[in-house]
Image (cartoon, rainbow, N blue to C red; front, top):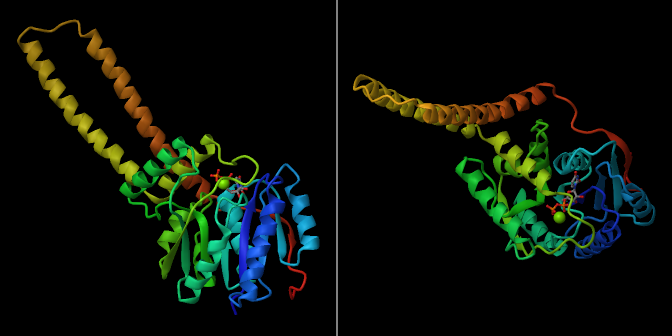
Length: 319
Ligand code: UDP
Ligand code: MG
């Protein structure tokens, strides 16, 4: 059967959540009435350690809406790990999942198209934004550069695709086999293979509330994406080092010649510049290498990625 779970990560989303649930329920009911998904499909709201009333709202929705399930994580583990928690919990209860943000920026009505593509054999269906009109100039420009830079570094991602996607059961299982803590789902889903397809949609503005991705988090996310999937930055450091060595050899020859021909000057300026320059280069290189060492350290601990405080499963669920 085609049992669908829509997985929604929620972090401090009290303002938008009731509206989101009603829109998703509407979409789900319409899919059920068209016979595209089974009646026991549902919506899984994952509370990612919110500090506002998000969990209370999830409980309320659970009590009045038969399609709603809730998953309460014990602390804030971030968008990606909240999605993993949702996928891991839902995977045994459904044949396919759609992950979507809580803020209704993604058009819920393309879920139907995603299901059609699943029915015709796709294991992964990417929701891709047809444009970025609703974004600020800054976000648009940085996102574009980010995708370009990622592909230059050899990280496979789907251009303008965020975390709005359908995964079949086996695609979910494959994603869950990636055990890293610094998880970058966009890279992983492009890495697992299987038959993929794409649906296009116009991304709107957040229906209510503020973005949970301020610049600081966005930059950390981008850095994580790169360092989780590519070791090219390390190679670039090595190349930079080699170039500097060549460069300093030329400088050495020049200095020796100057010395032999008696044209030496006090040389303070060049000395101080090179000390600063090389110090900077070394620190920069060390910083990047440190990123990887830090990551290896974190991964070596194999710590759990989240803890579940409570699960509200569908009332008719066989336990
Ligand atoms: N989110 C989360 N944990 C976090 C940060 C965000 O679960 O630590 C969720 C958030 O509730 C939303 C989604 O991730 O459903 C995307 O966040 P947001 O819409 O704020 O990001 P933006 O669209 O501004 O990039
Ligand atoms: Mg958003």
